[in-house]
Each structure stands twice: as structure tokens, then as C-alpha cells.
Length: 219
Image 1 (tube, helix red, strand yellow):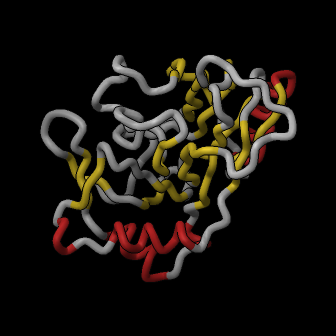
Image 2: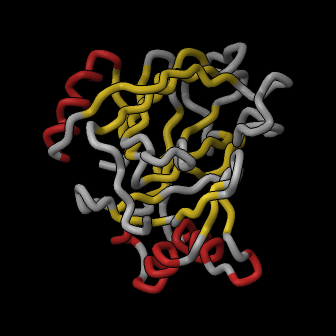
């Protein structure tokens, strides 16, 4: 499963199913409320300076040494216009061998704070053998931009995908495989049949971490 939406009463069942399917133990981590961009939005956030209906494709916390395994988002309230969450699958099975090679070998750097540190767009967790894709344009860049093929390869993979899309309603949840899916937000492609405008879109985000830290092969 890359992404799914569900009602509040099914949260525990979904988490238990993920633990069974992936043979892992999950524990809740950071919990945050995500509000529409405003003057108070930190400049380092991906949403800084963007309209409420726009956020580029990314994974959450790509700058963490051990990225969250899953992201759970609960809709608290909606905004004036309908906004849909979208997700695109970046598992290696949907890439060409050349694209996967670029993602696994081309050097990138994390540049959020302090000294830039090396990173790869795609890597394999040595403990589990599972692939982990990470990307966010606000904290990652190619180490050698003039010789980079990663951005073009990323655009090519995304262009071939049919994005999953869903307008979240208050009380509804989605869960995203943060090692596999890029997610974003955009103005809804079609207005829901029933729509009650709100004062501002607010989501609660909870990260689910694995018991063992991510162990990349490139270190």
C-alpha cells in the first residue's frame, strides 16, 4: 500500500495491518498541526510563500537521517476552496533501470542547516532490503547541478504516473508510505458534490517511525 484514506475508527486497525504486512513495529513520533501558509510560516518550510492550494511533490523530513516510515494526516478543517492531496509512486518497479541507477548513484546534498551532507534520492535500507526514496526541493539539491540528471529523471517518472488524489474532509485520515510516495496538494480537479467552505485548511500530521533506524547503503 502506498497511500490510503480511512475514517477515524479504523486508525488502529490500519496501523496493525501495516505492521503485519511489512513485518515491522511502528511507534508514533512527532505530531504537528499544519495550517495554511501565512506570514508566520517559517521560511525553511516547503509551504513558505505558497498559496493554500499549492505545494510541490515531496517526501516528509527527507533531511532526517532516519526518515519516518509512514505519515498519518488527519483533516481538522477545510479552507474556502476544495484542495486535494495527491500522491505519486516512486518505487523502483515504476522506473527504468537507467532512472533507478541515476537516483541511486547521483550525489545530492541536504542543505537545510549547517554543513551540507551527502544524500541519495533512492537508497536501500540494509536492515530490511526495502527501497527508500526521499526528495524535497527546499532542502535537497544536486551536488553538481550542471552535471545533474536526477531532476530530469524525476520529472520523467512523475510524468508517467497517474496521481492518487483525494479531498480530505474533517475527521478523515490518510496514511502515506513515506519511503515510497511523493505527496503534494493542489486545487481540486473537480468540486465535490457537497462542499461547505471553511475558514482555513488545517491538518494534523503524525509520523510513524520503525523500531530500528534506517541504515542506508551509501554511508
